[in-house]
Length: 152
Length: 140
Image (tube, rainbow over all chains, first blue to last red; front, side, top):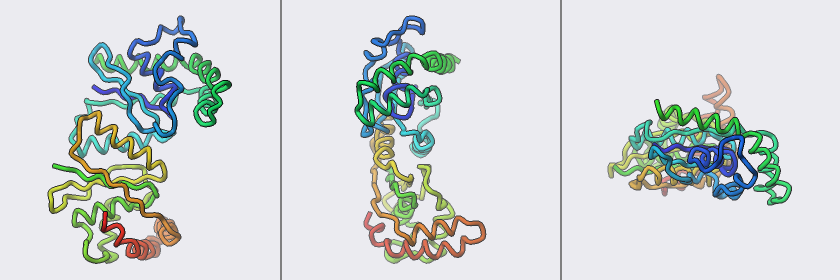
């Protein structure tokens, strides 16, 4: 199965969720700033990457884990993927879309906007990193639910 | 079977019209009559475009003609289509970006057609606009 995590910019929450899914991040209690900053693609993608479904890796069960940014229009991403899957006869069990945007807090929004839109890396990146650490519990709970769904 | 995916990002269903021309649901050699246009728009609607995928039928060359449109974000829509089909290892498709622009006639026509009871007033304006840009659509 292909699991696609998506959020606004496809560079903070979805990347964090994909990284946790792949075991690239320590459990909740041991998470440091450096762990987040070491994730590939974290706080690096720009608006011309939005919509580009990118492979992060393969998990232990052989699922391909992807992430993508949808500019706050999850329905566009969902309508296109479900519609194309219907027309190209792709079975629904071959892919899953997971919206991580609901887990984003104000620090992540503000920091992400500063860092990615205005390129104010200094105040933006520490702010979005702190916000991601604060939202980490919610993000990993979502990933655990996705993984539990896979087991069923 | 090859699929042709028409898309545009102006909020008006140009992609659906282009797909209908390719599939033969709308005539290629002359502008459509109001009732012919209405039949196609009855399938797709005149909405602002939520990127839903519509199948407008098959062309003479046995190509399936698909259409979707959004309001803005055309670059992202194109990348979603290409990357989703790429990860599914599908390459027997052609992506056609329709670049027709809206004008006042289309905007007013769609607005009026959306008001309950005034559909029959708005659709002739939409039809007028479609007739004006039909040659451009037909070349896609």
